Structures are given as structure tokens and as C-alpha cells.
Image (tube, rainbow, N blue to C red; front, top):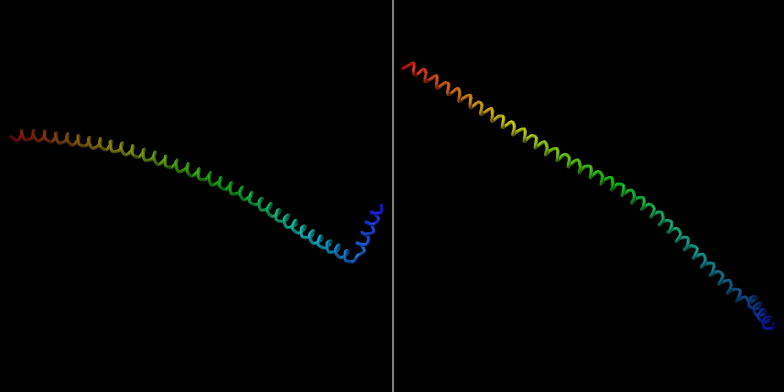
Length: 139
């Protein structure tokens, strides 16, 4: 018990000592400054985290928008590609049909020419017969 009383008395002397009071005040001031610095740092970290979260959300929205645009352009490209293939097929069919029509026309024209030639040959033969008949009559 005597030791306890001596410790309490020693502690009371330390508390009453101006130098000790100044040391305790300085420690308290340093502690307050450190707490203030830590609080400022936490505020900055929280602000940066909020900014990063907002930036992240904006980036996600932008990515989604860009994906939609990419899909839209891909669909447009596919549509154009299909139209192009369809036009190529139509052109090939048109060329094929025109070629067939031209060949038929040429064939018919050839038949017409052959008929004309036969008619002309028939006329020539008829004229030659008439000529022979007239020659025989003249003799």
C-alpha cells in the first residue's frame, strides 16, 4: 500500500509539474495534427474512390453504347452484303437470260436468212427455167 501511495504522490507531482504539462500538451497537439492529417487523407481517398466509381460507371455505359453501335454496323454490313449478293445473282440471271434471248434471236435470224436464201435460190431456179424456156422458144 505504501508503494501505491508513493506512486500516486509521484504521479501527482508529475501532473503538477509545468514541464510535464507542456509535454502532455505538445503530445496532444501532435496527436490532433496527426488525426487531422489522417482524416484529410481519408477524405481524399474517399473522393478519389467516388471519382473512380463514377468514371467506371461512365466507361461501362460508353462500352455498352459502343457495343450497340458495333452490332448496328455489323447488321448493316450483313444487310449490304446480302443485297450485294442478291444484286450479283440478279445480274448473272439477267446476263444469262439476255444471252439466251440473243442466241434465240440469232438462231431465228439465221433461220430467216436461210429461208431468204432458199427463196432467192428458188427464184433464181425459176428464172433460169424461164430463161431456158425463152431460149428454146427463141431457137
